[in-house]
Image 1 (cartoon, one colour):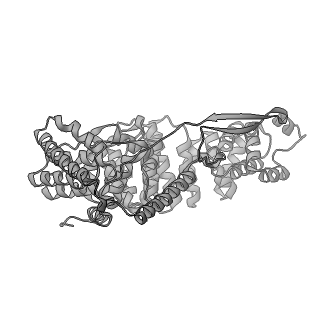
Image 2 (cartoon, helix red, strand yellow; image 1 turned 90 degrees about the horizontal axis):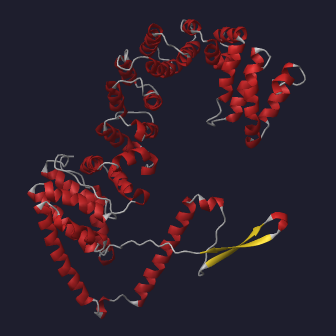
Image 3 (tube, rainbow, N blue to C red; image 1 turned 180 degrees about the vertical axis):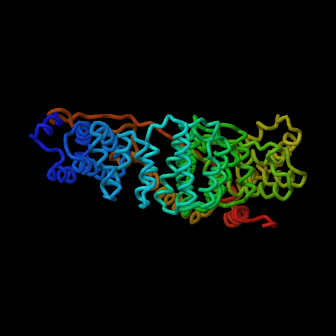
Length: 536
């Protein structure tokens, strides 16, 4: 209908008044009309300047939305329908007209002309050359000879050109073109990637990591390894690298070497200005926990490194997603072979995984089973003090389950630990009635006030991070079994809504040593976390 009205001259979709009205629309109003305009574009009867102004206005108004480029796709169809006008866009782009230059790739795509795209590569202006390379990436090329020529032009652009737009277009077009060739051939892939990696200009490594996600099918296994190796070095934007790498690690497309991925994270996480949480690297975390061998490799590598940010990330991973009592079994093939490394790992394990006592105990038992004699003795000491001296709930249950462990070293170790722990608990029971050990009224009051303030802070943080608290109103009930709210019904009628309340509870064991000796306890943990190997 819009096309008929416009083409008959009754209305104008490309007039200055129409464009000004589009720019004045609110966000919601804009998205209510953009799809109608988008469908009308391919059949509009107007000049190339008018259609470009309309498309530019629609795309600019959409901003960074994922569907912002839809009008550009419709422009391609308009150029297919109006080839002579599309050629004028290309000619004006050669004259460096800004509007034509920014839409030239869509005109060439609509014309389907590789000749026009190659012609732009000979232009003296670098912006025009960049458009030509970009256009080659958008064309449907089913001729192997032409595809290889495109790769040749991309290689030449990377080796001889320092213009960032030209280089960026060459990288994107090369990855797209490789997908059109036989992956087994990987024409000039490693040569091209080596040139980009060695130059390391601007955000090119970030662009390669994004291309690894968007265009993986045309890459040989050697090329993927080559890219992963580069991402473990110096990059312009570590957070962006981690973002795209995690996208690459989607479960359906996981063809990367885990050791290389771990090296990338180990290199980039410490460089971040703000810490990164495991939920921001969801696919990586899923990959680690789906196979015990993966978690063993990661924990062994990062605990042995002692890097504070990496060990803190491990502690966050254990508690992520409500996981509780996660175990990590490190086999002898992955456990560090040197005594100093085994001792270092045992102390880092306790320092960072203190609030995940079962996980820490499982790693210490791996050292007991596969470590050297001195390391085994140290791991057993740490299992007792501070772990068992602080926790007697889930940790004790876990150790009792391991009494029947097929490893004689582990079963003997646990038998000794349980015997000592029983004696310790029996000693505590003998002192529970001593008046001297009971806290004073002032101490109880101080502890109660501290707990109340801590609980208030926890509730504030929970409300601040909850998406539901931003969407609905809430109220705090001191007591009750149900809530009553009034709903405004049809015709202004008020209806009561009664909702029964159910209890949701969560329990956590408070470490005894944090109460008995809070200063010494925190000092011990801090020493475990910040200490370094003698060799460092």
